[in-house]
Length: 479
Picture (cartoon, rainbow, N blue to C red):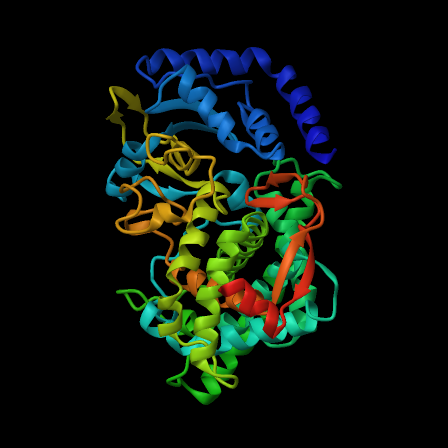
């Protein structure tokens, strides 16, 4: 209701300024006669409402496909989140954007995103933290495995039924706080997780700062989170000054000690903002992937059996007291194919935005300087040209050479490809290993709906009914 109330206020505001808005729109149109085909929608709000409704109904791809069919399968114009936007479509659009990073555009975010994060324009991290690289992740595998095992013993094993999505989010959030900032207090992590969820809801909200609106609540949550993280940052700075540097660093220490080529260090607010973004990127999306992997495993018993067989072989090789190692993650080939097929059909991230830093031509159309550009996974992930029978869940698509280049893009591509993709892979596989080797499960509500905001969220949290595996049942399932 808050969403529609906010848009009602928007409609009142733009109706007052309607003549001026149309005059500006007319002048803009006449000065750019070769824009991509499409419609800018309503003045001020553009087509944001239509896009939001498609996400709410669980089919954000429909918004894109309808316009690709009506206007152009290569590029179309629209207006989303208060920005004039060119949506680049298909593998060719992905290739163009990923291959021209920092030439025609820069990584950018909608104004709502910037306003809810910080008063300054957000600048994404330009470095790849050492601990996110594969050679460093091997040192964190035991922690990932241990935390997954402890989480399941505490929150899953005592129960007949569980809600997967909130529990997966709880695990992912606690893991990120532990590895990024060495925070292990479960009560503190639980306390700060709630405002993170409020902030997430505000990223795609209407930017009306009135008490009671989603945007207003997100601003308050952002301020609270910043204050908490700034306190942690200042405490860590004092510890580093007193004890000096050490060979063992978490992400926070790395960010405090790192400097650019001019020996400038990051401000406390910039570190806080980047921590928020990394916490979102590494916990909200991975918890979504974990949830929907379990959903598909419940729906396809043959796929579950293959995953169980692979994971039981790994469990036997590591022994009862051992923990997962990086080599074990590399052996989970079929399970990762299942994860990839899950991300193809239910992508945890819809895409990102770029901004044109000069006028340029694409597919015969002019993209003006200052326009935003959007690439979206749905323009390729469900296209039968790239994935035959696209609605079918088929992990074998990722065997051998896998999909064509620039068609499967859950982590983006090019220089701005998600730096945490290996971290996400290790986290997801460690969790799936611990769940699959303990339980078989079934969906409580086969008709549960899914909405996107912006990641896919099951309307009821995806309740499942657990069946603990015994030695006999395991043998029957894997043979």
